[in-house]
Length: 452
Ligand code: GLU
Image (cartoon, rainbow, N blue to C red; front, side):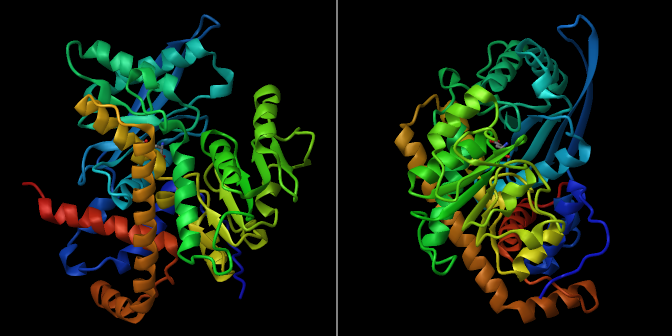
């Protein structure tokens, strides 16, 4: 059955997060206990917007806008990255902070959700300019961030160097205090964890591997020999392409913002990494067929890994996706309406809050080590990550099975709760993951109580 959607799709990320939430709430048990908690859990606790003057290399003062949203602290202090991007805005950052709350709850790290963004074009900035923006932003955030209040990390176009500047600035503002855990994703020399830079992709891999092993895609039990396409060649995409290849997958397509390269018999990922470093793009790689940026998503494959930006698979292209499994390394690459189309076409999706949670898990390990002044072995970090990602995968798969089995009772209970018959969406893995996460946040909120 195909769905024809004639209206323009709403691509506002905060509206999208709300639609996902509304799909999950009817499946969260104990509806009587909610009594307004559902709305509270959705609204961000705090939204900070700052205006920052920064002198750029041209000698002029330029004005930059920065955001930090703390979505929920019911399960612990805020946690989430800071991105530098021209389209960073209040609604986007709110949405990303909300996903962080669900992500932390789902993989059971003791944090709430937060996110930050600075509106800028990172490609047009020198290193010195980025440093001044970062230090000014850290100063503007002041004591709203801190080791036990809100702990930033890298996100789009920020990295371990950015985190080192945040740490240094914050430390200058708090002399004599142990401030190492104020930020994660730091360089190894500054209390960082070697595995952090590849952690998101490593988590994507563990989740995918385990999902296949437990029979998530009948007929595709392992990655060895599977055809994989990766959209995006930033931190997550690049590491994912390499890790999947090392596991024996045939990486048949990769891309970045300029375009993609495809070879149905399998690409040499190491050679592409060299090419990207030299040419600045994978799209001109000589031993593959060059494709337009959007076309990479439509290359027929077993596993598609969107590892770029939000809203990449929409009703405009969902019908043309030719994969058996989509694993969301990026946050929010699929719209709610596209989710319905994919689900009707039998394409499974391992959702972002599960698939890309490896980054925040290893951030948590870094934070815990910093607090204890310890250094764990790299292998221990990876083994702990692996166990946590596998456990979360099983929880989601089991939850979805239970939701499908109990569909009629969920439907009638929800109908009673809202006072009238209400259709509820057939649950996919995203709704199952959200239901687990929201349920954990709800339990924490109800156990703590509402103060005063
Ligand atoms: N920015 C990453 C994410 O979206 C990591 C956040 C963190 O490590 O705190 O999950």
